[in-house]
Each structure stands twice: as C-alpha cells, then as structure tokens.
Image (cartoon, rainbow, N blue to C red; front, side, top):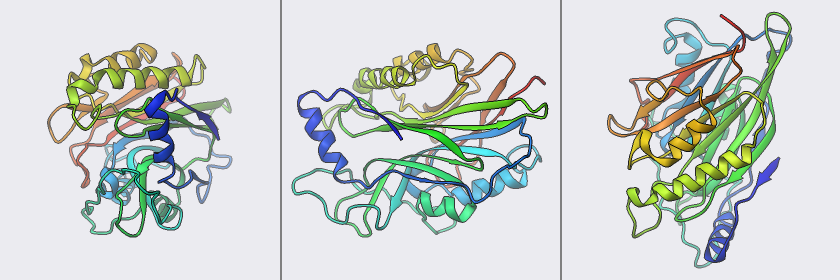
Length: 314
C-alpha cells in the first residue's frame, strides 16, 4: 500500500499521531470470486456516505444485483465508494491512550435492524474490500470501533493507496485503488477509484462556512497526490460543501482536475437540502460516465449516487 502523508506542522503533527494511535490497521480482502475470462464493457459505480452503519449496504447491493436500481438491468460488476464506513472488533485497539480526544460514537441502526461493519458486510456479500480508518468511533463504548473510507468491489483491485488530508478538527484519509479487466474486443482497461470525505468543520469553535478554506486545501492535496497520471479515474466524494455547493473552492478545484464532471447530474442532496456528495470523472474520450442520485437513502442520512462507466464507445 502506498501512503501519501500530509505536511504536519506544529500541533497538527501531534494531533494526527494521537489520532493514529486510536484506530486499527487498514484492511484488504479479495472478492470471493472474480470475473475470470469474462469480458466487461460496463461497470456500475456507487458513491455513498453510509452514516457509520445506518445505511443498509446489503439492501443496496441486492437492489443492484436484482436490477431495481438500474431500470430493470441486473448488475453483475460494480464498485462501491463509501464514506463513514465503520469497522469493529479485534482489529481496533481496545484501550485508548490517556488524554487523547476522540469523536463521539455514531451508531444508527439500519432499516434491517442489523448494524454490521464494512469488513463483515463485504465478506457476507462476496465482495472485495479496501478499508482505511480515519478516526475512532467513540471512546468508552464496547466493542471498539473506528470509521473511515472504503472501496468494495466485485472485481479484485490493486495499486492501493491512502492519502492523509490536511488536518484541523478530525483526521481524514482518502483512499484509492485500481480495478482492471478487458472489453468485448479483448482490449485491456484500468480504472482508478477514489473515495474521499472532507471535513465538515474547521474546529470546535468554528462553523461549516469557516471550513471552506480547509476543504480547499484538502482537495488540492488530494489532487496533488493523484498527480498527472493518465489512468482513467472516478472520485466518489462527500465534500461537505455546506457553504456554497458548486461554488465552494473544493468543488471548483476537483472539477478543474476532472472536467468531464456534470455538476447537475453528479451531485446528491443531504436529506433534501444542500448538495454535499459528488462523483468526478476523469475518463478517455472513448469512455462514458454518468451518475444520478437515488430517491431512497436506505437508512443513511445521505442519498447514494449510482451510475455507469462504459469502457468503450456506444
């Protein structure tokens, strides 16, 4: 796994080091089965803030596989770019270092009533998973939990990377991985997938609007870490753009890097209010990418964004 560390000046260095001590290691596990010799021309993409277990992942995946979310077309190959996923159990340190502040626990129940962490859910669904924690999920509650970003896929992936973002109130780590296959004409393809979740606030005494500059720095750092690599890329993100939506500098910076993005189609509203969630495309001219928000939140406080990547003309 490649790691892109942010600059750690002064107090931020100590805060990041302390936050790292409260979470467990990153996780990767391969999918239960792979596409093997099957050609893949289209891949479904979902970007979703799953509200730390409140979103019913199993129900959403069932909807994909049965075609209920894609106009009746069952989906065999898909990738989920998840934010606010959680992991519990033995992988998370049972005890916290003395004096280290941690975020309060978020633990809503999904509609099914069974709150399962992202690693166990992926295993139950036969999906591969890459999970990197950003922060602890609560202090004294048991079992211990952490939360962060995850990528789940029916296809195996490689080129795993974590990008530690500039720090203010909470530690944030964006992640990326690459899936690959070949199309019906036996042409190989590769697609880089990124899951990113930016800060909502700049600090305990500051509101969302004052975090706009921090989110801009986080977006620029992510863009710098991705570099000028020409690999086709999809970024699924919760930008927390409370202050200005499409006008926020974080969105502007990412759209400049990924100009194929359609703001009107690629954003989802938070509980029917401001647009916080976006999918950005950096694709070859012969590829197509589209995305739309779903009406059903599946128990989360965010609407999933669901779309397709076509790796050939037509």
